[in-house]
Amino acid sequence: MNEETTTVSVTDLSNEKERKYYFNFPHLDGFETDTWRLMDYFEEAKQCYEDAGEVVNENMMEVLKKVWINFNISSNKHRVINKNLGLLTPEFLLSIATDKCKCCRKKLWYGRCHNGMTPKQKEDGYVEPSLDRMDNTISKEGGYVDTNVWIVCKKCNTKKSDSVTPDELYRIADAWTNESYQRKELYEQYCKDNRTTLEQDMTS
Image (tube, rainbow, N blue to C red; front, side, top):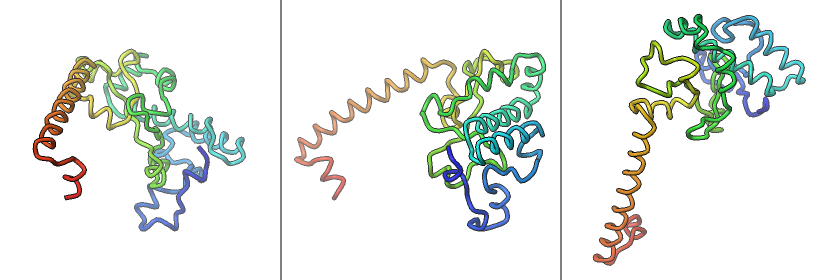
């Protein structure tokens, strides 16, 4: 990732609210608690940026992941409890913070607040990551632990949120595939009986 693909000019933004949340990435003008969480993260990101010749490189992107992780394990009381017990650890979460969603393979953007996703990044196909319980039978209080979480995009998290096991989704996918195949055969027969085609239907 380079600066050219992640920068939006402040003057191109239409109002003050947009300027606040879509300020020029990587927003290193000054430390802000809502953006960087901790001064250490800000200093580390700034050092990575300067060491790379004022270019956003993989080292700086890793700092953004740390900031995102810190926010996600500190914004919920049950996650904080598990973090304090050593059951939900920043080190482990960083090791599983992939650059792409493991389900849909879309690119994940870990930036927050002023480092949030710009319109350009949305156009480039980035999606928001989400910390998700793999086994939903475990309560939210006890489910957010290293052994039961992974990071996927928010949309994929939503799609699986009501499922308890992967088998449920397999069954849905299989049934959907089979039904689609059967309906295709029925439609082809309908076209044959009525001397029409799908292409003709679409253009009529």
